[in-house]
Length: 125
Image 1 (spheres, one colour):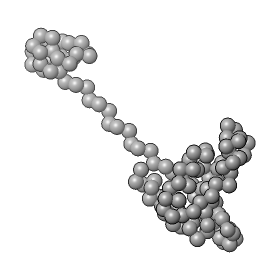
Image 2 (cartoon, helix red, strand yellow; image 1 turned 30 degrees about the vertical axis):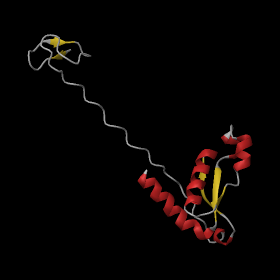
Image 3 (cartoon, helix red, strand yellow; image 1 turned 90 degrees about the vertical axis):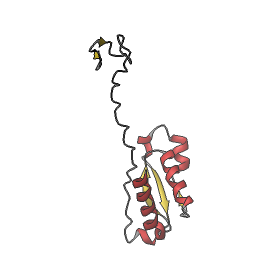
Image 4 (tube, one colour; image 1 turned 120 degrees about the horizontal axis):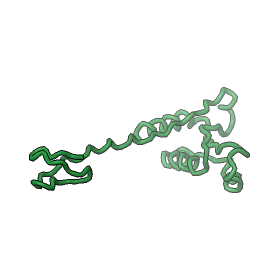
């Protein structure tokens, strides 16, 4: 029950105004909006041997959609990326346990810039 601060009359919990004097009743406080979720990436640092290859794996994503979003962000920043598991996940995407995750691969020279870009995006989200 809500009590009117002016006349002291008891009112229903869902009442907005006092039924006796018409005074606006105190509204329940609204919970604060939830904090936005920030993407947390687990980068796969390339070894010295990996840095001699044409492509290195930057990150592995659980879904093709997440990998495609990261690849799009990288391409927008001028960093070419490749999803070697894209076709496989389009065909067998319903069973993640079969083949695992979708890899996002880039040139070794772009690794540090890509990691910095995604870390920056994660902090701004």
